[in-house]
Each structure stands twice: as structure tokens, then as C-alpha cells.
Amino acid sequence: MSDVYAEPATGAAPTDPATLARYTTLRLGGAAGRLVIATTADEIVQKVQEVESRDEPILVLAGGSNVVIGDQGFPGTVVLIRSRGFRVVAEDADTVTVRVEAGEPWDDLVAATVERGWSGLECLSGIPGSAGATPIQNVGAYGQEVAETITGVEAYDRTHGEVVRIDAVDCGFAYRGSIFKYSDRWVVLTVDFRLARTPVSGPVRYAELARALGVEVGDRVPLADARATVLRLRAGKGMVLDADDPDTWSVGSFFTNPVLEREAYELLRERAADLGEPPSWPGAGDVVKVSAAWLIDKAGFGKGYAGPEGVAISSKHTLALTNRSGTARTAALVALAREIRDGVHDRFGVTLHPEPVLINCII
Ligand SMILES: Cc1cc2nc3c(=O)[nH]c(=O)nc-3n(C[C@H](O)[C@H](O)[C@H](O)COP(=O)(O)OP(=O)(O)OC[C@H]3O[C@@H](n4cnc5c(N)ncnc54)[C@H](O)[C@@H]3O)c2cc1C
Image (cartoon, rainbow, N blue to C red; front, side, top):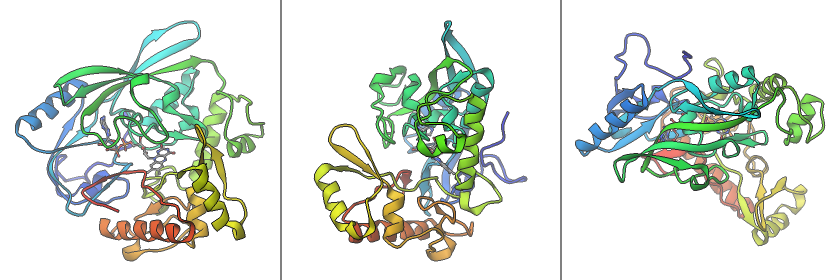
């Protein structure tokens, strides 16, 4: 069993709600009213039902790597998802479908699939957090996203009080979004991924990854090479959690890449005319996705840019806001995020939106 989740320091009661900061990768967040741990899918349902019967607010928390929790904490019960494991539920000559418990550490799963010669998750190596949280924002990186391999999700539907299966087509997957994000209705219990039985990756789509692998975009490479190269690239950007590296005490990218209508994109190009062409990618329909990192950097917030109380932009990646002192309050991080968002808006007329889920705080 992997020990990747932040857990209370030795000596502390495992359900000590004193501070949620110890359960988040940003090391931020005030106290919870109560904290309970669920280690199986049944237990998740049971604990959620118990809390509901007491009419208390519930916060479902797994790896804490995509949340910003306010200094006031959470005045209800936090249900920590700690179910583990995966099993094959269907297979044929070409594919295998694995059912993964929500609390399974994501990168353990990716490592296991690469080892077994199952292709489809290899470019998502090194992303912190749990398997059950990956559908929430349709986790993606280096040209892959979980929407491509998820076939369905088993969830507890709090509105109807029943366990349901939601097929991938009904999950509303979009760029860093799904029906689950910003909704308290569903608690994900298991996720099914259909993977290809092949020792090679899918076609490499991301130019930076292709360059690092020494191949052309569209080529396939051994799964282990894809994983090792993604891990190396991510580590160089502070995007793999490292307890000794404050550049990784973040939620990864703090802002999503803005998706602009054609007209807004042309306005941006005019406002950025002195800076060259803003890096962009075509989106679905007549929209353009623009690099948030570029906008932030060109608006004057470079790597290492510091805010109050020792919060700062990572020295390795412009999109990651870090609590590098380890002692800041959420208020300080929020102040830095606001300064950046407003600065980018003033300079380019583009509004950045936060990627993590904000709990009892606003930006
Ligand atoms: C260094 C770093 C790098 C990162 N890189 C990437 C990246 O490349 N791509 C990317 O997409 N993300 C990235 N992230 C963000 C994050 O790792 C992912 O979003 C991850 O899937 C969050 O998992 P978690 O278990 O930590 O979720 P948490 O932070 O615990 O929860 C996030 C949200 O999901 C909800 N949630 C969690 N589990 C469940 C469940 N079982 N049922 C219902 N709701 C649930 C929570 O209530 C909350 O709203 C990165 C984060 C860090 C710190």
C-alpha cells in the first residue's frame, strides 16, 4: 500500500480535525468540525449517509491536491477517501477494463498499468491524488486525459440516496471539467478504465514530450519510456510532489488555460501585438485555448514572483502558486491569486479562472 497521502504526524490522532492543512498539498486550510476515514466503497456510502442523517455539511476529500480550503476550515464533516485497489472486470484480446477504488493513489495505478503492458494512462504519470478524483476535473496532461479511457463511474447519488452507474457519455467530460466538478451530488466510489493491451503508448500528441523522447508527434514509444520521460519533465517543473521541494507545495496549475471566442482572441492578439503571437491551441468549435502561463508571465508575474507570508509563484513553473514558506494562511495565497488574475485582466482583458475547487474561500 502506498503512503502517498499526507497523513497526520506521528502522535496525532488519525482523525484529528485540528487543521485540514495537513491533508492538502498546499498545506493550507483551517479546522474541520469532524473528520472520518472511509476505507472501502461500502464504508464511503455508510459514512456519507451517517453524516447526512445528522444534517451536517459534508466535504469529500481524497489526496487534497486540487482544493484550496479557507482559513476558517470546514464547519461540517470531512470524509477522507482511503479505499484501495483495482481489479480487471472485463477483457478481450485487445483491451482490459479495470475497476479502480476511488482512494487508490493515482500514480500507483498508472505505474501498475504501465508495468502490465496496458496502454492509455502513461502520459498521466506523476499526477498526485486519487483515482476517484480524476473524473472530477477530467484530469489531463501531456496530450492525454482520463475522458479517453474512462468507460463509467460508480457513484453514490446523494440526491436519490442510491448507488448508480454513470456511463462516460453522461459524465459531461470537458476541458478540466465534468458534471462532478462543483457538485456535491455524487460521491465517486469506483472508476472503470478501458486500456489497450500493448507495450507501446498511444500516439504521442504533445510536442514537448515528443522532443524529449526523440520522436515525432504521432509516434508511439514503449510505455515505460513514456512514463519515465513524463516523470522527468514533470519533476523539472515541480509538478511531482516532493516533500523536500517547496515548489511542489501547490495544486499544480492554479489557473486553467482560458478558452476564448474568436473575437476575444483577436482582441488579445491586438493587446499583445508588442509581445509576439500568444501561444494557443484550437479548441472545439470556433474557440481558441490560450496559454495561461504565457499571459501570467507577460503580465509581469514571472517564476518566483512573491506574495505575502511566503507564498509565491513556483520558481519552476509560472502556473503553480505555492505555499513555499509552509506557514502562510490561505488568505495570503488568495491575495496572490487575485493580484495575478487582476494583473492579467488589466494587461490583456482576459479573465483567468482557478482550476482547483475553492472551499470556504473566494478569489
Ligand atoms: C504538483 C501537482 C501537479 C498536478 N498536476 C496535474 C495535472 O497535470 N493535470 C491535472 O489534471 N491535475 C493536476 N493536479 C491536480 C490534482 O492532482 C488532480 O486534480 C487530482 O485528480 C486531484 O485528486 P485528489 O484526490 O487530490 O482530489 P482532492 O483534492 O481531494 O479533491 C478535489 C475535488 O474532488 C472532489 N473529490 C475527490 N474525491 C472524490 C470522490 N471520490 N467523489 C466525489 N468527489 C471527490 C473533492 O470534493 C474536491 O472537490 C496537480 C496537483 C499537484 C499538487
